[in-house]
Amino acid sequence: MDISKLPAAADRVVDFAKDIQPILEKSCLKCHNSEKAKGKLLLDTREHALKGGENGPDIIVGDSAKSSLIHFTARLVADSEISRIEGIAGSPSYMSPEQVQSLELTHHSDLYSLGAVMYELLTGIRPFRAGNLVKLLHQIVYATPPPIHTQRKNVPEELEEIVSTAMQKTPDKRQKSGSDFAAELTRVHQRLREQNARIDQQEQFDVLRRLRFFHEFSHAEIWEVLRASAIQDYPAGEEIVKEGEMDDRFYILVNGRCLVERHGKTLGAIDSGDCFGETSYVRGARRTATIKAETTVSVLRVSSTLLEQVSAACQLRFNRVFLRALISRLQGNEPPLE
Image (cartoon, rainbow, N blue to C red):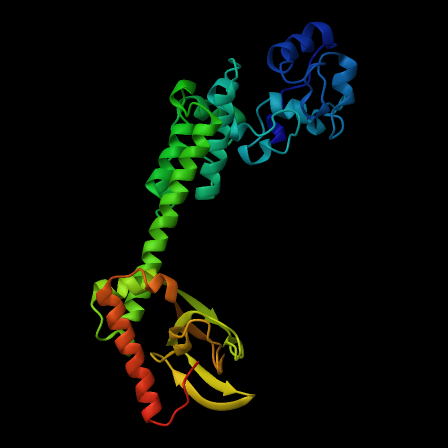
């Protein structure tokens, strides 16, 4: 702030009632009166004006360089400093055009301010920036902020449209209510979640179709199994299934390595693409071995209940591949992996 631009000292005695009070009544009393005192600053009388607000005196008699109220009214305050003058300007960067013009304020003004805050959250910059207050207020009333996508390219178009609508100059062109604003955000959030979920499922599908367990499955059958399953990660040392517990799920090791233990002794190991959990074929049977992650692993957990709801062809394929793996282990004198 350049204090050299402060107006020259008056060449006569200043009368508060004649010289100062009319200015305050015209520009300040709407927000700084006995019923509404922003920042606890009252400007309705000389005594109140000199007392200042919650941040102390805003007028220092005989020292205009230290009088923040004079800086503000002389328009020497830069946009970056405006929000610091609590109780006088608040945060003009987020004011609506009608607030700047001292017009009637409704909930639409709040929606504008919320849009301005969202603009800054999404881009990292304020919608309007200026070297002084008068330029800032002029921009708020007449200028259009740079489109969000020019400041940050990865912001969804629907989200940019919500902010743009909220910051329309004419209040009636903004969202009708805060509920409508929230509903629009909710719809965008749900769509993005669904989109991300589809991407995650596609990645999971791509991983599964490379496993030897699924080499004989059609793409449609892999999708059926995936919808009846969930992929879960386990850290090294964590038990995936425990000896003696009841569990109705089948398991396919997606990546990593696991150990097979019984009565505390290691019986073998399984690697990516192997399956275990064959006791799920026997309703009510208990696990006869513990499967523990030797490394960090990802496991496809297939619900036997949901598997019963997939197509007959998919069920047949799954059972045939799973039982073939079990028979292969038995023929190799390896213990069942339960």
